[in-house]
Image: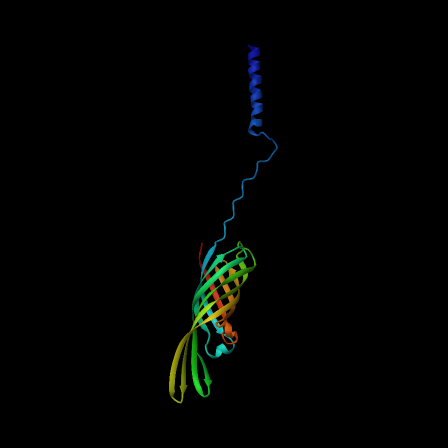
Length: 209
């Protein structure tokens, strides 16, 4: 009986010593680290609203004053560096006063630009809070003008509309949902010397997809 008890004891001891080996077939080898959580993909489409100010330059300042308006814009992500862009809106110009051949004139121009182009990021990645970029755009602009004349007590008014091919170059800084942009808008690419204005906008992103 003692022999039987001894045999059972040895068998139990052997099983106990074998258990760690079964639980860890390769003792000393570290368990593989858990898979890293994948980073959230940046949005493909972003929508903006932009208050806009224009400051006419050169001879354009003789026929219209600074303008104020707003635009809606969208960016479509091609890569971490490049985006397609589009925006359009309405800008109302203030009056400019001048005299031609003794006739006092007052005139103003209003613009409806529709622009499409591309944006390239010069600094930063999509995970950064602040990014610097440059942009080039082209499209059409619908221009409405009004003029009033006063000569010797007689006055007259006239108005008209025209459509031109336009272009814009700008540089900007994105800070989270804010997009500050400074550039130039040529309302008539065939006559940039008399149709260029400084274009300043402060965009706010209100949706991302």
